[in-house]
Image (tube, rainbow, N blue to C red):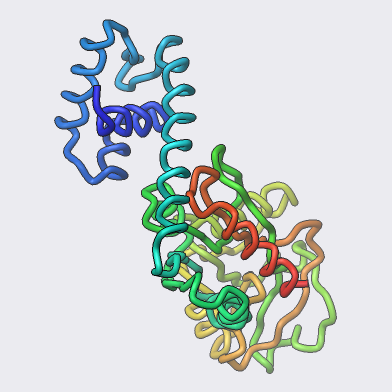
Length: 294
């Protein structure tokens, strides 16, 4: 039994999926299968069982997974602590951030944190999608993610930073341009543009419309990847856009109108894995983000 086998087992056991584990670990699926078979043979234990086309942990596998995860956390934290104590190099925090936030208060907060931790911390910043952030955190290629998510995954810590409400955008000559607020029912009969359901935010729009009982009544085109494409169409047409209130909209000649919806369209979180060796640094940084966001 070696360390690679344990890391492979932890990843497969956590995901219960060889294909996803191979992607996260950047190794071939046959290599993972062989490693697990050797581990089971060496321990004389059955760790996984087939369930249809999928695999699941056995009770014994779940017991071992708990032990292995705790042991790997202790090992990773210990190694990181020794390196930090004896290295003259600063810690590099790899940050994945959605584009609508990366250009607002993020650079200021990161610069402030670097100044308060001179020669201790540097940042590597990536402007990527929410889906890429989630994949990067899972694969440990990002230490910190800043994105909007609907649900919370076990093994991660989340700190809410910003809220982006539902709004409608219209061209300045639209009949609604002087309205102070709209109801979702006002959109019935209008050509409404919003996000593609392939995106998390698009799925949130669809769920909200269904909960409010208007999903089947709208002339809805859900085919757009971001606020830029929606606002570009809206400013030169009679269509209305149902979007989140983000920085992207400032570049367009559109009027923003609040919508009476009992929830925000997006909540932006700072999130990181609980087993990240830089856990304490990330906690301090998330707290600073929260303070700046208020």
